Amino acid sequence: MIYQILTLLLVLLVTAPARPTAPPPADKLRQEAMRTLRPYVLKEAAWALQQAPVTVTASTSARSAGGPHDFFSEGDYWWPDPQNPSGPYIQKDGLTNPDNFTAHRLAMIRFSRIVGALASAYKLTKDEKYVRHALVHLRAWFTDPQTLMNPSLLYAQAISGKFTGRGIGIIDTIQLMEVAQGVLAMQAAKSFSKDDLAGIKSWFSEYLTWLTTHPNAKEEMNAANNHGTCWTMQVAAFARLTANEELLALCRTRYKTVHLPTQMAPDGSFPLETKRTKPYGYSLFNLDAMTTLCQVLSTPTDNLWAYQTTDGRSIRKGIEFLYPFVQHKNAWPFPKDVMHWENWPVAQPFLVFGAVQFGNQAWLSTWQKLDHAPEVPEVVRNLPVRNPLIWLD
Image (cartoon, rainbow, N blue to C red; front, side, top):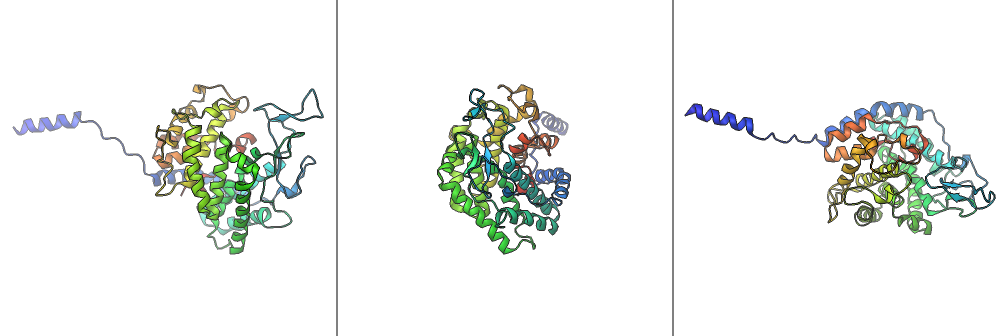
């Protein structure tokens, strides 16, 4: 009888289905991500410590309708008309005109790169030297009357012969998101004075007012594709820095009622991006933006990571759709991008944010293997979260 019982128990043990492996805890994956980032952060911060500020006042364009403190850029895909060389520019969607003015955008990307690296290094080491040097740049851009940038974007993405500035140009200031997040990461440091913090937050408060009231800004807010997502992403990042709860609530509502249900298909793809000339790059970009929204806006009582529409659209579904094509890009079912197809993917923030939130080791492992220090300007421009360490709280 005992033998029969032991035999039965052995059979049950052998034939019983294996218990599913529990996903790695979020803290474990977060620490693993931080270890991966550490050498990149310290190398970039060492470079940043050697850099002097360069703001919009360092360069001007005769084609700008603004003054020396106004940000100016030109539409990337607009070219001289061969049939009318002195007339209005014509569009070549997806093809960047290398002769357009980009100095202010490049200066802002550099500023974002510097502050993001210094804030990340401070978060790793608590060394005040990183904060002190970041403040040199922050003052130059936001509080020094000789070099500051005006808190508006009237002259962005201008088109020669057509527009002195457009709402679509507001996407250029996604580069200020890591500046705002970097300030949040450093604001408690001893070197960060109350006056400095107040001045910087005042600038962002003024810019938020412009972003939510000017006709150009409202036009961008209502853009149907990644431009609309990026308006909300910026407002969310700047509102968190300035503790503007009203705008944070607005951004949560727009994510749930506008971006997710109107931009994501039931399968997790983004049809408004896949029909464009750079369907792969734009899809990566929009998913990065949406996951950043979830990272910035989620609270214990309103968790956007867990939110789904009544028909099942969710940020997780978006990651699950795109992830196989990050692993195997040649399986991409849509046309290849007309430019920079070979430069994507890099270490997309949706992979690391999603891995930590959903306990997915495979997503993190893929992210670890990708390029964490891209240098192609078009890739850098469309990767506003380049320092995920300061966002991983």
